[in-house]
Image (cartoon, rainbow, N blue to C red; front, side, top):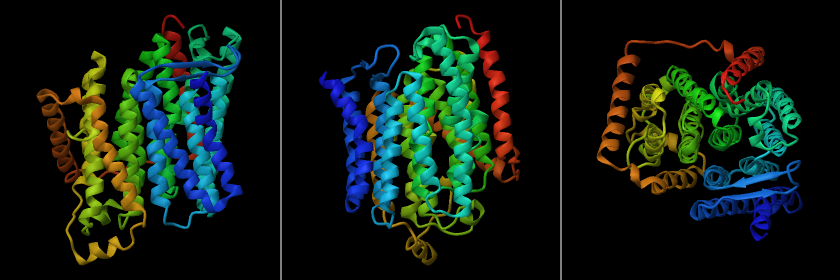
Length: 489
């Protein structure tokens, strides 16, 4: 009973604090920071105890919550990213409305990481979608409002498919619990997975990410890419663990996303768009090995948030060609270097431990493909690593335009990237270290070889609004075929 009360209090707290900001607006920053820190504590408690808590609040017809080590990793990711964003915005003129919506977004994503039934998850995802919409539209420019409306419409269409699937699951089992997918018809699984793939930004269903994440304000981009998209990925991981027949389906989409995201990101010339496209690839790594998805989600959230804050709030330009022609301040470049090395899987950073743990749990058919994906990741982040960086007058001038809270947020995230190594110390063997370094070096060599000989601009037709909806229809057909072909569903 005490655990249930504590859990309900933790879920409700961000919403109470968010609404409390409107009553006491002068404390908006402190309320937001306190809510995120409480989530850090709750997540660490789950990770340390390694216990599983299952709460049936209204029997099979109501709310089901599952809190365990897996959800602890995802909750910790959400919490640390939120803390970093709040520190980044601390000395800016963000209004109480911004911090209130940040708390509501944080709380709804937390709730999604705790839910184990489709209706509660639907509510959590819809609340997070509305909060994200308001934050993307926060600048109130014509451009930001259009991008926000585009995101909201795509999200709502996806969740409509999801809701129909949830109703079909209930019709088959008289329960909305995730394990009801075992007896659900193939169309129910296909509809639910379509909604989650779009919401999570996985494979070609995630091509709404580049515009949304690149056009949003820098701290909002960091939250969206670092934590919010994982609210759609986490249920896919949980379903794969609960329903054995769905594990191969999730892994296939993970492998596909890892490759297509890296391919698109490598040829992108805009820093924030590149990071958004890379997010599709990194979400694929999370899905490629559902049993150990938590650590990869954590290390990606920390690294990607640091890179978004750097690219949007510290770099003098978003264009890679322009960045190659000027020298970046070494202290700013160092943040991009560490975060890029972590996502590439370099030893001494948590990305190495996460990649090693993930590759240990891959199936034989995934090995070669994901190793190619790892080389592709190193190629993508070489674009940041090999930017010119010398202390010059221009670099010093650029540093004056850096967001005031950038240093605090960057240090916080980079310390997290180092500390998270402790979750998988077993990764540090001679063989794994040698393989990681060889993969990264191979990626760097390929980067120099290709960039000097190939200049290619990928078409953006699939990112257009009408094509995003069309892709959903095609994905639904593919999903139905994949699920129908699996025995036991």
